[in-house]
Length: 69
Image (cartoon, rainbow, N blue to C red; front, side, top):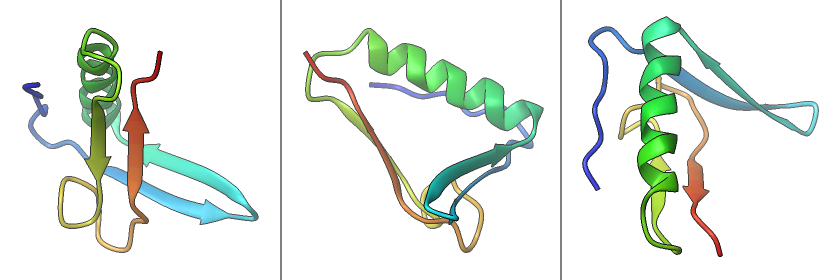
């Protein structure tokens, strides 16, 4: 899978009161939307793994999104 990131993207993920909160600027939301579309067209079992060392802002918790079925 090949993913595209828009210039200037910012995405952060945190746990707050037992909820997963994804915060992003416009470029981050557009980048994430594109990645979800790419994932939707991939084979079951494919996944995206994001963390503070791979695309998320410092202090973010890890986020894994997986294609099932």
